[in-house]
Image (cartoon, rainbow, N blue to C red):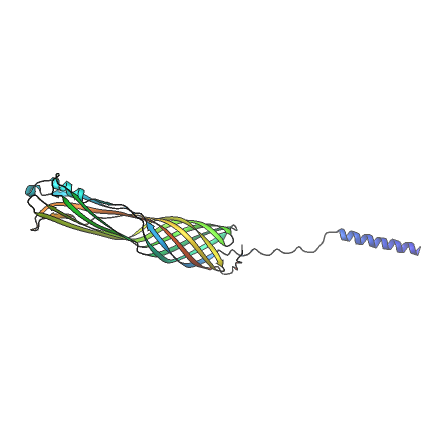
Length: 300
């Protein structure tokens, strides 16, 4: 009887142990580590350098004012003066070196997207072009043409932008982005016109006019780039931008062609028009004030 009771108790203990082993464990699951803070979020400042080039035409127009028919006759001289005073200068690949700085803010969201706002300004060295032209138009086919000498210059003094940026993280440390917004720049242009004419009697008439304009122009810009976070808080970028600052024109006082004794033979009104559009390619270096973020620079 004793043996039977002991065997029954042992069997009960074994069954209890087997049942307990089948029960779900009450041990708490491991806590997942928090995601790393977004390394791109925050303010940044930096420097940049590169080049700019454009292909802008410059045109000089001439409009008729009057000819002194009562005293000197031959009204055809006015048409010849207008035709001779017009000049068209084709654009060329003019450009210069640029250098400056930028400041901005990024917000990383959705894991792989970065939106931001950036403002920059750059000085331009060598961003000027000079144009020269000599035109001669006969008066009624005679061998006494109206000759016009034109000298003109255009110059981009500085250029800056205020742009939005939207990027995608190709890797945690490499971003490709598009950008666009407002462009502004300091521009200047000037020109001079000199006209001369000998009449049948060998008498010379001449007149000159100059004009200049200096302005801060506002337009638009668009482009894109690649930025690489190569170590904590530091990134490097390469960027392309197209900018359009619009057209500039200037009209000086009228040109009066006169004899040496001051008698005016005719008058014309010259005008210069030019545009400021171009391209920027530059490299930049940024320091990011992303406090609290501890970016882990991955190796690939």
